[in-house]
Amino acid sequence: MIKQILVSFGFSAVLLLIFHLINEPILNGWLHVYFPILVYFFFFQSVMVIWLGDLARKDNWQSATPIMTGLAIRFLLTLLGATVLIVSKPAEIKSLLLQYILLYFGFLIFELFAVLPNLRRN
Image (cartoon, rainbow, N blue to C red; front, side, top):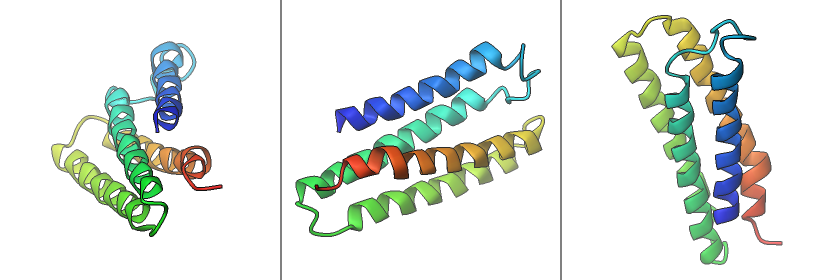
């Protein structure tokens, strides 16, 4: 479990480095000011999914319910987060929501290919 969390932490760290190092000089400030908060939000969701996957592994994979529950909770929290963003109406909302959606899919794809396969039994 710690290995998967470290991999997810590394992915998040790369995204934060992109924001802090190349957002202004290369991307001309395209990444929203709230981008780091979004990365933290999705990182903690990733930790939750990894934890639920570890519970399934400890239960000898009797069911896929913990993994499916984690993905469903992740989706619902993402919808809730998008709703909060829309209601709060920050500056440049379209850019922020686009980045939000891209981060959601980025973390989802990252977990499906890099984290969750390491949790399943051999």
